[in-house]
Length: 302
Image 1 (cartoon, rainbow, N blue to C red):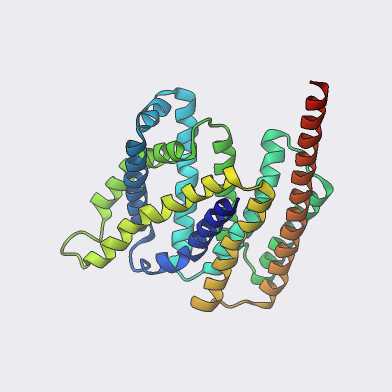
Image 2 (cartoon, rainbow, N blue to C red):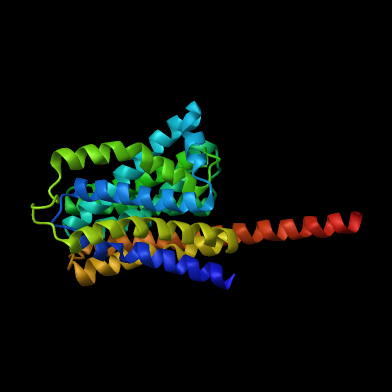
């Protein structure tokens, strides 16, 4: 339990502070950073699976037509998500990126209802409505919808829907996804790359680009470990550390201006997440009580 929480906190901390890392690469075109992130992630994940003797599972997954189609769609969603985040940070707009990951859990609730018939309780519905009001406030106040936030939340939510249709392990799935995108990344670097030798990129820059692979992979592994050892209600609450740290980076490091409209919208989002988290905690506790009662009854009957 303690190790699981520690892994969860560490994963969310790495994700939350990642804007500082990608800001160091802001002089490189976002699509180029995305290409390197894809390739070094592939090296990291493929190396990990090779050590575990499970690399062949990627090939098996890609040979199945149905699984292949889902993986292609998932690879598009995660690539667009990564690009949106990198692009936003390269322009110093960490505030909208953090908003996207605050909204994401509530978008997932809606997608779960649409694609899997999951029923929305009153608390969940209230949380979704509050989030919609917050986005509307920003749209009216700033004169434009928070497109980056909506893109990040929407693509990550869609990615979650697709992943739910897969029976692959997390690492195997992500390895297959980046393998699908890798040829496009190589082609982009070959045709439009600005970091080849003699073009101004030093070894330090390439070291940072190489580091994007482990920084993508390690938090995912830690998060996967945590979900196996920590209650889901705890995971749901602690994961808000990620957008909270992103929010702090945006305000304290990037100097993003918190307008009065943000001052209204963000508390609405936070209120929605409190409602959602309390409801999720109660549901998790009720399930555990029901499972314990069923176990006791089974033992008694036996």
